[in-house]
Image: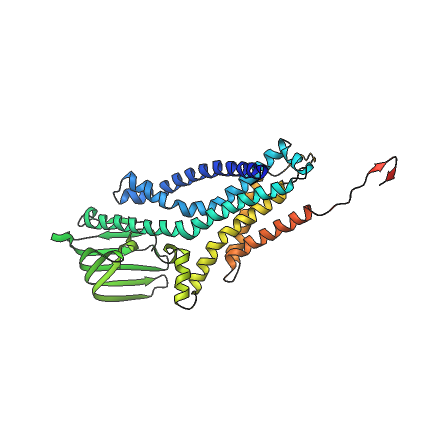
Length: 360
């Protein structure tokens, strides 16, 4: 790697890492505040609070890393412009080093985001599910007080009639209103927390499950035994699904089953789209800030605001774009805009020298 390439890549990375570290700290504090009430209601300590907030960081880091990269790249280019280093790079025809430095910086971001989205985030989701299930098992087995309603999570109330030897509870009742479309009510003469190969479950004996929706429809299912995964009682909404399976495993499942299902394909496309966002934001910011200008405008939009607006537009397009490739439509459009702008700014230009009124 040439010195100029290494110097520029380091300058871009330093700006990004400083901003990204501050963003992660703020996001962790916000996440702690968000789940504080739920954790305190469950009678858990600060270690559980900080740990569960930390396990949510890979998802938030994936969402904000490409924005921090765009802002960091823009700030570094602005500093190069103010110090006249950017003018020297263009005057000495070392623009190739600028492009290479940006490429190295973007490649590092693509690898980092790919690891977060495809490997680390599913692993953290699986660990968070296991931890919250342990918390729920601890609360059901130890914290619940007979004949007193306890809020397990916002919208989920639980009460027991008493306890017996071996961790068995009697007269179990739970009311789950977390789903706005359907309310579930569980009743059982007895319940026991057990563990199987899939994690903790609650074994309900001799009871029923009542379902009611917002349209007034009502149904009842009676059972002799009913096993419920405790993660259903451990968070604001039911956990699980493809978010806990890493991308290589999803692809192997697709090969074994003769192809990916629609949900699996959407999950893979969404994860791979995160890397495309990194390339797109770097291309646009490079097109906007890699060329020195002597213009003295009275007002210019800060690069931080510009990047945030670009990210907002990209996410909006991707959210409303139809089809299986919808998650990458916004990033593709932004990437094309950046590539076209770069090609236009690098277009060959005719120069004229005027000597004593004559054009050469």
